[in-house]
Image 1 (cartoon, rainbow, N blue to C red):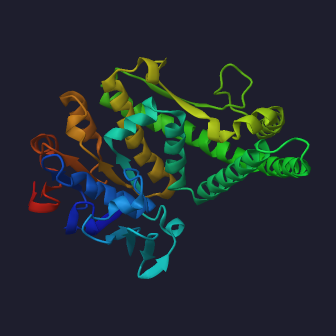
Image 2 (image 1 turned 120 degrees about the vertical axis):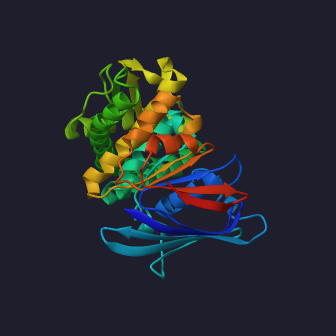
Image 3 (image 1 turned 45 degrees about the horizontal axis):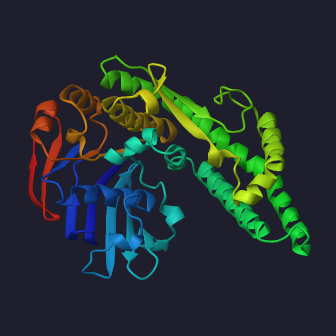
Length: 385
């Protein structure tokens, strides 16, 4: 996978910018607030059509404009293609692939990326939803079946929740009450099959990614720390929630708990059992990282997950993803930083932002690296080293 060129128009604080990228390492450096992260954000959009940094899509449009354009040219498996995503202040975005209008779903995953932003430490320290979102996104980018199964599962849960809200607002003696109970039962008949597919997809992902992540974590920590990952299923009766459930047991447990918890679900107006309530646990040297991990260990764990994703993607599709790393030099001490930089394969197109480019010159020495100095939303200097 290689990004050949990125073109931005009225995107964030960037008025107009076209960037021709090196197939190796591309470093965007400059002071904070100059637009470096916006460049990485635009590449994320070309992969997923959305930005995790924007609460509303209208925020992506420059304040002086009515629309914004993110356009990219790519090379994947010897085939060229182009993607454009247009954002507007007053209407929905539009997506174009190879000159033809298409949907966001059709573009999703066409560009394989792995990104590390400082906010990614929330995968370890944040709420369970952060960890579920991490797993679901990473699996979906290389597995269209999982992506569709997950979307269908969430639609079912949202539909069930809507009925729970409606039934909570009426009396049990109301004629409509029984109708709504029957509707909930019809959703409960559909849930076990699709829920198991989501559960199984996540379990297989955790088993595979944990091997790669431990290898990366040990390398970055100079073999001082061992990383383990466990999937915590809310359906498990066992104290150890990471026990792998077979299909029959999973489905029977889900059906039983949906019935058992129905009254509570009606009171809370939410479905409180299923994969949308599961969690992932990270352990460093057999201790929960979320509780006992130091700031440095948690940052190392987060970047280890991202480096592991490179191997995961390559194993799935036979092609390396593009690696995006934001503000790397401010996140790690010099020893761990050099270990991270040294682990990046020269076969991987890498796009990095930093306030300091001198450490990269030292770490990469004669590597194929292209430097872009960023200021005021534009590129003011391009050099190689």
